[in-house]
Structures are given as structure tokens and as C-alpha cells.
Amino acid sequence: MDLFGGNAAWTLGLIAGFVALLYLYGKRRKRLLKDAGIPGREPNLIFGAILDFVWKGLDFENKQRKEYGDVFGEWFGGFPMINVFDPDILKEVLIKDFDTFTDRMGFIDLDDYPLSTNMFSAKSDTWHRIRKIASPTFSAGKLRKMCRGINLCAQKLTRNFIRAAESGEEVDLKQYFGAFSMDAIGNTGFGIEIDSQNDFDNNFVRETKKVFDNAFFGNPFVFLIMLFPELRALAKWLGLGAFPRSTKRFFTQAVTEMIKQRKNEAKEDRERRVDILQLLLDAEEGDHQDGSKISDEAAQKSSSTLTTDEVIGQAFVFFLGGYETTAGTLQFIGYVLATQSGVQDKLAKEIYLVLGEEDPDYDNIQGLVYMDRVVSETLRLYPGVMATNRYVSKTTTIKGWTFPEGAYVNVPIIFLHRDPEVFPEPRKFKPERWEKKAEINPMFYQPFGHGPRHCIGMRLALVEVKIALVHLIRSIRLVRLKDTPDELTEFKVTGILQPKTPIKLKIELR
Ligand code: HEM
Image 1 (cartoon, protein in one colour):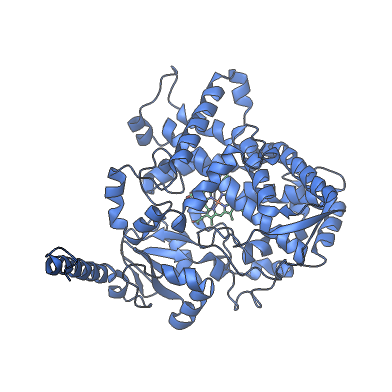
Image 2: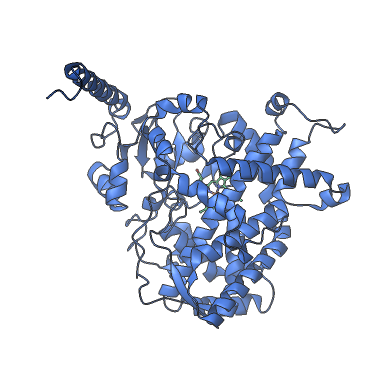
């Protein structure tokens, strides 16, 4: 029987030829790490190691390290990654030779303008300019002023937990903490009241969540680009983006509206503002004495100005960073408090002794030493961002290893945090480890990364987390359910650490 209408031989020949070409191309492309002498498994020519991450979870990387040592290669789809566990090499990459390793992979680079101008994805000089402009947002002085807004959001969070305690309903931690962190970033960063704590399905929360749901396996198209990064130019040309269209539209419109409103405010009101948006707008308006709009080209050339589109891109990444990782961290802390006996009471005692009835603020929370250890230990066990990376911009040799141009150095944050040599019994929650913090090599602990490109929101996140904990622990107690596991072992495969099943707890009044 001739299935192909007489052209079977031709069709089969074409298919076989295409598969052979794909195979040869994959084999050639995947030589980069091997040629540089980086050890590692023979990669799957299409998927690299992605399928192993999916099937084998966290154990996969541990096994690899045992087999190959502190430096080994792994293809993440079509991206050549060099995993580094050696602290001296990490220090060289993240700090000492930062100029060679300035950029990171960021979000997949597609047609996402203006959101794609965000600092997380920005490259070289553009990144330097944006980072320099945005950094003062998180100075101690600015953070002090943001505490009032964070306290208001934390009080609302506590009222929601009290309501749940009174009604006996179970609390989905991510939902409650997600709404809190979204309200907090809206208030401190943009001077707006999002009020997602009274509406869990608020537009800001919904559109931000979509970005993470859409990453990696959530969007077959993004996944295809991860396997074949060479298709990026075509995808861009076709107008395809890594973020959902609705998210792009929503953030562009929302931030444009915020900018418009801010510009219509009286000068004195604007000058009183201490938030991220004002700082970005001050940079955007930097050169305009006459109120006219600066051209994109001129802004990009100047070292102290941003284009309007860049303001939108930064606002977007601050909403993302401000929401997901902070909410995730609070969720893991909530889980730890409910499952580790004695920790909540010890925290309550410390809060009483150090703060009395005072509202927490930037200065007095520095006295909460035990709380700092609990937060640090939770971030060690469950770092919100599992890994970060740096692009090798020119072939460089460190400690005898050749890092070839075009590869990425992968900083395996969660695995560094679970190194048994540095953290004995690594899977156990032991806040007392941090009594001797000075003895821990900082390269093995980096929930916020390290070096000039570490997390810009680190201090804000820690202040938010601690203020929220003070309010909560004064009023309520988190209680595990019958089916709450003793240890969290199942996570979704994305760059962000998320438990496979939502963490739910019961709440009791204190
Ligand atoms: C507990 C909460 C948070 C965690 C665990 C976290 C973690 C991280 C990590 C690991 C990186 C990569 C650092 C590196 O490559 O060395 C990063 C980058 C970044 N984070 Fe955070 N983050 C948190 C909260 C925040 C907040 C609240 C914001 C903003 C308001 C934020 C904004 C950013 C930005 C913009 C970058 C890119 C910085 C750059 O490339 O210069 N993050 N974060």
C-alpha cells in the first residue's frame, strides 16, 4: 500500500535527511563545553539536561556533582551552562572579574518591548546606567521612610489572618502573602493602593502570576526557544514575546497612567515622594528644564537618564521582584514556623523584649537577632531564586578551568546552600547555624546573589518580611494540618522555588 500517493521514497528520504541534519547540527552545537575541557554528561542533543531536571528533581544536580566535581557542564536546552561549586571561582566570576561576567541570561530575549528594557535582563553599559540610577531607591534613608506604608500593609495582612482564625478556614499561605507583598510594593514603590489583600484576584496579582506561569514549560513557544535559541531572531521578527500579551498591555498601560498622574501632581507633592517611581521619573526628566521629552537615543547616551519606556520596564521588574520572591519567602517561613516546634514562641518573646508595643521600623528590627537567624535559615533551605548565572563575554581561565565565550556560569544557589561540608545536616532547619555567621564562606550562601549585580531589592525584601512577621506573631499562631509534610521535597520546575502543592495551614489566635 502506498501511503504517500506515490512519493513515499521521496518523503521518507526528506524526513531522514532532516533528522540527520538536526542530529549533526545538534552534535556540533553541543561541543562548546567539551572542547573547553569542561567535564559533564553527554548531552541529549535536543533537550540537554532539561528532562533530567523534570524527572529527577533536586537530586539530579547532587548526583552530577558527586560524579564530576566542583565544575561541570550541563546544557539547559540550547544554553551551555557551567555549574560552579568552587567558592574561589565564584568569587572571581561574581566580584573580582565582574567586567567579563557582567550579564545574565535574564528573561528569554524576545519581542517584549518596553518590558524587555528591565534591569534584570539589561546588558553591559545599559545595565550599568540603569542600576546606577535605581540604586538610591533602596538606601537606608529611603527604606526608613517606606516603613510606614509596609506597616499598614502588614496590619491588613494580620487582620486577614485573624479573620481566618475566627472563621476556622484554612489559609493558602502564598495567596495571603502574595497579596501582602503586592500591596507593599504598590505602596512603597509606586505610591498606589492596590488593595489586593481585599481582592486576591486583583489585576496586578493576576498579570504578575501569569509571567511565572508562562515561563519554561508554561508556554510551549518559550520552551521551543530554550531548546533552539537560534530561533530567537525569527521569533522576534514574527512579533512573538516571552510574556503574555495581556501582561505586556496591562503593565504598559498601568505604569503609563501612574506616570501621567504623577506628572500632574503639584511640584511640592512630588518632591515629598520617596518611592521607586519618583526616582525613575526624576532620571527620566533629568535633562528637561523646559519640560520637553528627551529622545530615546539621547537618554541612552546619557549616563543619568532613562527613556519613558525604560521607566516602564523597570517598574515592571520591580512589581515582579517585589511580588513573587518576597511572597515565596514568607510562605516558606510560615511553613517552617508551623512545623518547627518552639520557634514561634521564641520569636514572640524576642519581639516583646526588643520592641515592646512599638511598631517595627528599619532601625528597631535590627535588634531582632533570633528573627534574623530564622529568616536566614529559611532562605538557605528554600531560596526563592534557585540559581542565577553570568554570561562569559570573553574566553577566560580561572584556576586552570577555561570558561569559553558564549557559555554561562551557573551559580547553583540552592545546591550551594545544601552543601553538607559547609552546612552539616543540610536538610535540617537549624537557625543556630547563624550564631557563627562570620565563619560561613559567603559564596556558599547567596539567596540574593553576590557582587555588583546582586538583588537590588534585598534590603527592602528583608524589611518587608520582618515587619510582616512582627505583626503576625504578635497576634496569631500558625498551625500545621494533618497532611502538612515534615519536609518540602517536591517543587515546580521554574527558576523560582515553588512547592508543587500549595502550602495550607490553620490559624489560631495568640
Ligand atoms: C526575598 C525576596 C527576594 C529574593 C530571594 C531575591 C533574589 C534575587 C536573586 C537571587 C537575584 C539575582 C542576583 C544575582 O544574579 O547575583 C535577584 C535579582 C534582582 N532582584 Fe531580587 N529577590 C528578592 C526580592 C526582590 C525585590 C523586593 C525586588 C524589587 C523591589 C527585587 C528586584 C530584583 C532585581 C531588579 C534584580 C536584578 C538586579 C540586576 O540585574 O541588577 N528583588 N533577586
